[in-house]
Amino acid sequence: MSGRLPLRAAPATLYSGCSKARSHRALPQFQQFEIPYKFPRFPQIFGEWIVRRIRKKETGKESGHPCNKPFDTFLDCCRRHPATYEKKCRTEAGKCLACLEEHKNWKAPQAYQYMRFLEYFQVFSEGRQSYDEGPGKFRYTKPEPRSHGAGTVLAFGAQVPKRVGR
Image (tube, helix red, strand yellow):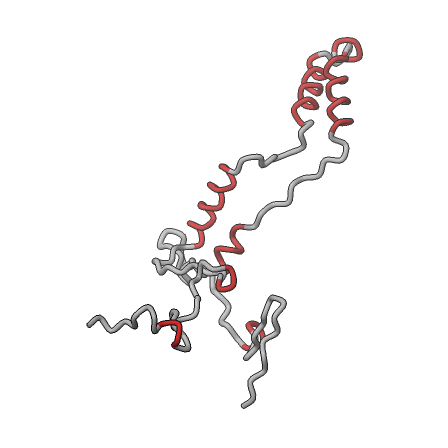
């Protein structure tokens, strides 16, 4: 016999489902901001290289004002024709002014700090970074009750956890 209840007797029992509550890390209520894998730590300079490569490949990232190119062409024209730039550089000046008028409310995009995330996940090795660079000065702060809390539990949501008496 397989040990399972017959189908007609299953609804009569108090609980006929799974005895374990859902707690997988992919579910929204159990997601944690961590890397669940272990791998060898690497020097901080490697993290700088990784961040530089990520920034290079980001799409839509503007390095400067959108009107830098028309302004540069106008300046080149003025340098090429210093005595007669008022006549010969009119089109470049018009393009530059039109661009400045079009983008007058432009603001530089805020830079994304990838190194903070890498430091939060503690992926860097401490102390000596490499034999070529000499001794490294990177150290993680040790968790203390003042900086990391002591016995506190925070719940983000509508439900307030019930207090358990001791």
